[in-house]
Image (cartoon, rainbow, N blue to C red):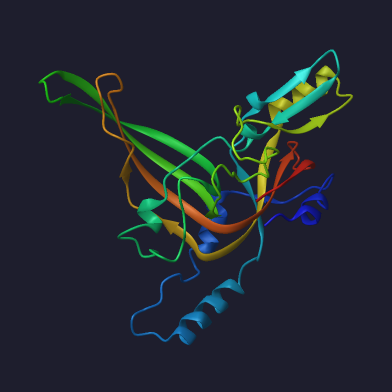
Length: 257
């Protein structure tokens, strides 16, 4: 659901942005699984008690890519493309799919309304691998920790942001979401170096989920890397996206799906 008025009311205002970890620590206190011997009423009461102790909505830092900001010195314009805040993907099957506690409670697909907040790799060393022809190679083992905010399953080609392309995906999926006019080179350079992005969210069931590990494909001779990923997810209605300066003042608000 788009929240246009809610988003625009924050323009030129300073917002209180929190980290994924700080918000997740609060959401972990909310029960998301009903005990077998517990009535639905009792479970719902536990949820209500826990949710009443925290804020209903949060501004959350997201991953920001300054390379998606382009300055036109001739026209003194600074353009921002969608990949500045939405250019990463992850897999949700191991936390919402078969074998999980939330099977049939959360719908997901390869296209989702979500945003990957961070993804960090830790190299765990190397080992010798061998293919079916007996060819051996050194394989790098990597542990990846990914943190994401998940809203809902999307229509084909849809993203967190409202796309200007009516038929879904464009040839270039990173499209312009904002243009600032009459920007001096000095201001453009500083903004590009210090700008931040955030989303406004309203958490919903199951609030916070940490998934088991999963592999990103198998190592090959051309790509001798084994990646095992652990996923942490905040489940929430993503209501708006923002671009701010270093002081958290909002200069661009963007509709979300």
